[in-house]
Amino acid sequence: MPEGNTVWLTARGLHKALAGHPLAVAELRIGDLATTDLTDRQVREVVARGKHLLIRLDNGLTLHNHLRMDGAWRVHPAGRPIPDTRDHVRVILGTAAVIAVGYRVHDIALLPTAAEGTVVGHLGPDLLGPDWDAAIATRRLAADPDRSIGEAILDQRNLAGAGNVYKAETCFLRGVSPWTPVGDVRDLRGLVDLVARLLQANRERYDHVTTGDARSGRRTWVYGRAGRPCLRCGAAVQVAWQGDPKRADAERISYWCPNCQPGPSPEQAQRGLHRATTPRPR
Image 1 (cartoon, rainbow, N blue to C red):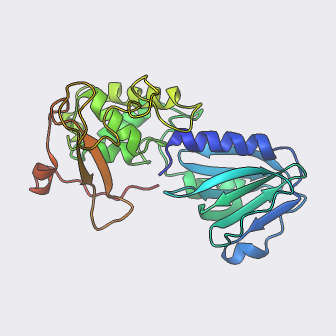
Image 2: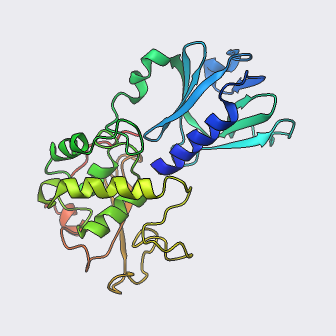
Image 3: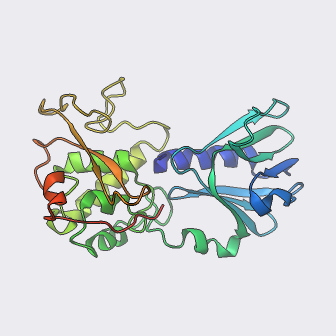
């Protein structure tokens, strides 16, 4: 699933391409929205809210969408043929100069801008947004002390925009196992501040660098490094599923170094020493 910095950059690119220009092309290739006519409307702004994209129009409506695991937006010069992948192209918005194509975007909805809260109102403070408030995010995390810190970071109701990469890297840098109960994490506010710093540091890039080294294979401490030596201590990086296996949208891969990140193991969690299965909203 794209991380918050990727969604933030996507919103900025769409805003730059579309805002302030009348739509010459507007196709919503989904359900009842397929007959909606948005031509000649103008895009006022495009903003990210956590991992949600909000395309606000000048008629008081917002086009909402979510990238989930596989969604993406691409901006092409006007006149270039759109690839014939009708099952994948779900939204096309174009001006006289550019065409923005939403590939495999999800949760498409057209709703009053004043009612955006119905789709994003559950989110916690946005790590890259003007509403970011570390104190509120910390209180939301602390409200469920028995939940694993890995799942709590991913819960968008606590803090919006962090995904699996930043979960893994934050837990590593704070020296805690992803299965550590929130109530056992020392300096929870410090952990929250670190998540925010990592996203801010990557705000201008689509990939993720948490080590300070942008060379291939050295961009992250543990994420994506299963079985490879920990860049800090040399122990083999471990990988396991974390979350409710009965919910495809809640179970995620976790990477960690058992030497640098002491705390509960997945096996201990499975034996019931720590259990957290609250669904994670997107």
